[in-house]
Image (tube, rainbow, N blue to C red; front, side):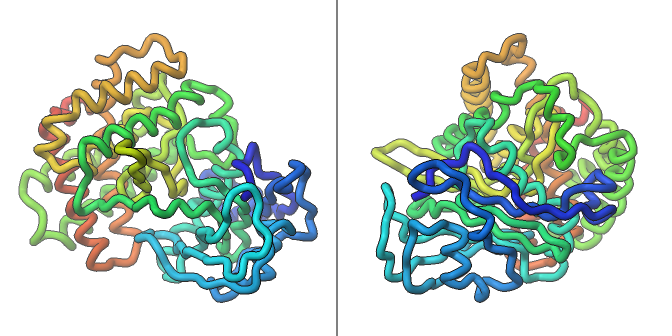
Length: 401
């Protein structure tokens, strides 16, 4: 099996003005990356690249051999959809008739690609697909958060097509946003989150990465305008499922979204942006819970409390959150300090946690507005909104705006 990448090395790019609307007027909108050779660590030749495809059926044995390299030989592929992604589609691909194995068994991989749904694909092509490919290419090796190994990454091209070939984490199980998680799972998740935040804590070079979002004043104003319209539509669409206290919280935050995005940026790091159960894979080994993180489409630079608050506010049922949030924030803070971070007290961490609670309504409302509606999706948006609004009220977060 290929070893974890120290980096992915781009060997083809096309610069197109105004293609990527994610905060850059001119950017590399096609990145085709390859992995090192399995045995000797040499660069894979350009000849083995596998370009993005339109449908999973186009991922042929030849395509997969080009992606994985010459050391993997098999006769056929079987793919089936997995996951509950709203903006991209994922498939488990089984390698049939595997003849030549490397140091670890490679019987299946996960292929992630652009969504078949046109609305979801349009949303992803606005910069989210590029963010995910670029995370594995540029940043995964610089942080210690657990993620699946990335064997190959390509795209997005001018048609919004991309492909990631990732480690199959089975038998790890995806979390369930509707059901929530246990305190033990939550603890593993917040400790893992510190592995994203700690290594690049207040690293000024993050602000110089062209594809990585760092919200400006103009962009904050745009977000505020968009959220105001989206909040109105969200309340109207889910009128029969929202309580009056929830509506009050949503209406109170919408006109202050812009200033919230720009505030408290003296402490900054990589922010996952959508760190929730559907994007986490849990395993239990000898009684210990471990977690790996997927879906890097909303990565940005911002206050770390946003990820922590978004996860705990949305992933635990309210009674469990109230009972365990102090100890869980403490576990995160302790893990964070292990990365040699100074001058960040537990009290400051707890205050950022309160401040960051608005990540919940922000992501929930914008996602509900921009993606196709499904029964599970609607149930998930309501659950996330309800839990986040309750956390905001419990913690007095509106006082911090």
